[in-house]
Image 1 (spheres, one colour):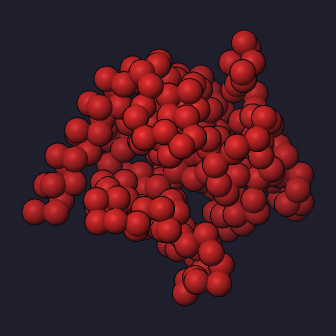
Image 2 (cartoon, helix red, strand yellow):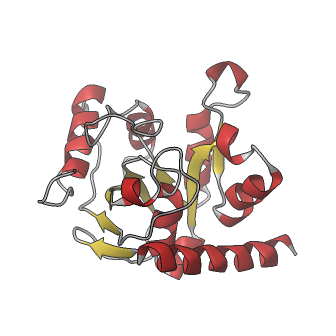
Length: 212
């Protein structure tokens, strides 16, 4: 019953997102084929996760889990249902003192079970003027443990205008998620060098008009 309910809610979210955003995928550097991947994206809105999830083809969506903040998605029963059952969330408590599990171990376990994942390596919503905040070490630690898996940069465009910070009603506006060429950690590559290279790969997907 929960799986059926999750399917219905997921379908509603897809229809709603398409109505509000006309969301589309631009597979610029990689093909939308059924292959295990780590999709990493910029993060400026609570709508980021639903948008990436929405534009994935159904076959990919079924195999993809989201790394998400437990303190946000467990705030009430509806969010908990969507986070756990619809997005198949790997819920991580951002407050280190409250953690009872190693978050990297949880993510690697999901990968070992065959899932693809969506992750936001900035670690939180970007409220700065810069298009990207510095990446946290998590992406490097995951890549180091499973270097064979494609890390696919995903630039979400216009989402900060669709769901401005502090607003609860989305503003209708076209949104594009651009998927770039995959990145892999190199043998003996230092953490900071890898994180800069991964960040640069994501920045390269920003539309030429800029990020205003």
